[in-house]
Structures are given as C-alpha cells and as structure tokens.
Length: 173
Image (cartoon, rainbow, N blue to C red; front, side, top):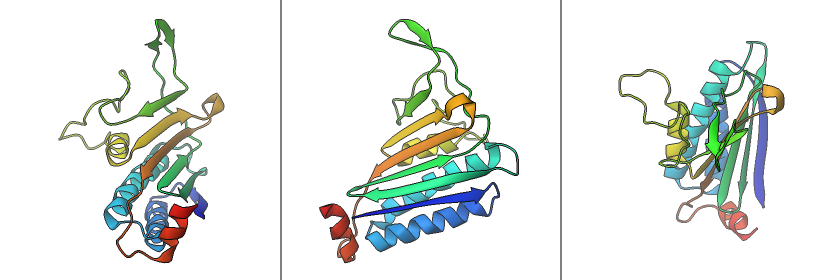
C-alpha cells in the first residue's frame, strides 16, 4: 500500500502551511514518527517557500507531489520560474553544465550557492541547505528548456511505536 497525493498551488505564502499540514496529516495517518514528520515538514516548507518566492510570475502556480511507499517518503516541488542558474563544472575532465545535481550534506558539488553553510547573519540562502540537512537524498534540476525548477527529496521513514495499522500495511507492500 502507498499514500500518494499531488497539489497544484498558487504562488502565495498561504499555500506553504497548507501543503505542510497535508503532509503532516498523511504522516500521522501512516504512523510515521513525529520527529521524522517534522523534518519532512520543514524541508517541504523550505521547498514551497522557494517556489513561492522564485517560481515565476505571480499568476503561475507550483506543484507539490508526495509519495509514501514502504519505508520511504519522496516529495517533489516543481515551479515554472527561471530555474536554477547552472554553472559549468568539470566532470571526468570535460566541462559540462549539469542538468541535474544531487545534493547531500557534506557531498554537495562545488560551485553552487547551496554548497556552503549559510552565514549566521544572512536572511536568505538557507532553504536548499536545510532540505539537504533534514533529508537523505536531494535531487535538484531544471525542467527542460529552463521552464522551472524541480526539487525532489527522499527520507527513510521511522515509525511510531504502536502506530496505526496503516504503518504495517505500508511496510508490507
């Protein structure tokens, strides 16, 4: 058994807590440990806030898709903005501009703004860093033709002790 949902939201600040509440409700129903749910909720809030702030003109929306399948939760936030600015980097000795970048704490590729720990006094620039810190795997890329950005992240789930039967059904599938 899996739980899957997808939302198309307006690029408004009020959409961020709505997406977060839906995710927390799904996690609670499935029997996910509250600390794990909180980490995913913060990561989702950061991805949604980035889509609201950077995701294109005000009339465009963004999409949030979440999947709980077995012991993993995958969340993807897609917008229609300008996408991530790609900087050329060397891969196996030849210059390339990566279409996709895998971001993990301590293993981020050089040359991107989310490589480094944000300065304490900075007001912006923490979103992707927080997502990478709170989840197990992050994949960041632009949609074809730079028609928006995609931030996808996964987290291995921990279950509540004595969680509802849905947790056992999810783990059994």
